[in-house]
Image 1 (spheres, rainbow, N blue to C red):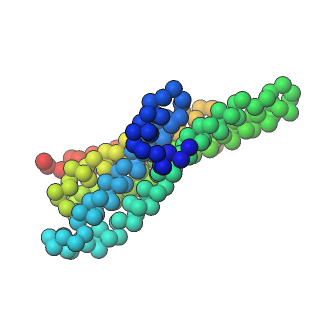
Image 2 (cartoon, rainbow, N blue to C red):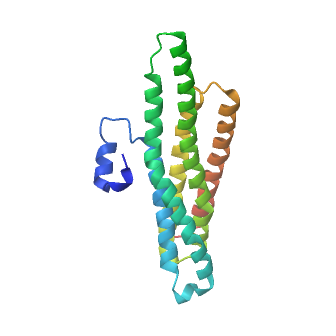
Image 3 (cartoon, one colour):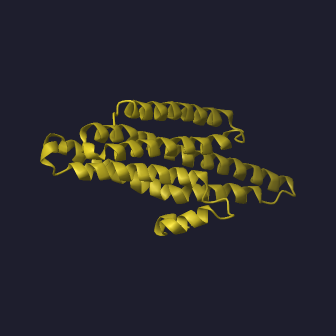
Length: 206
């Protein structure tokens, strides 16, 4: 399903339904999308204001970065659900003969690795926009400082949620090198996300 083409209410209802997708991975991608959207909003509230004329070039440079993140993360909402379906279907493959078992085993491993990489890419994109959010918070329209803070919190939620959805697949991946590399990237991203959020929130006085 192209979740980006349905209403907010429809997305909430389908998430609240009995099907396992869209689940936490898709919601994490949505959180990241909202983070980027808020960041873009702050650039729009800053550009053209005389008070912020000195930082207008910075805001104009940041706006397309947020646009790119919105596009990628919006698509990832559906991609995460599709990755889950791929794993589910791999486990349903026949396993009567040795050949079928081998095919099924390979398909499961491929699906699990893909299902780990999809949320990892979401986490990476969420973390990648956090410095941009911090910049708009520091330089942008200060009447929107709380919007910048919410953007940062959404980005952290998106990152950590996606990391969890990556990690849950790692114990089932038999290639230790692949699992280890993905786990290491998760560790780095988790630390970075926490640090970036604290850095902004601790600096804001309201």
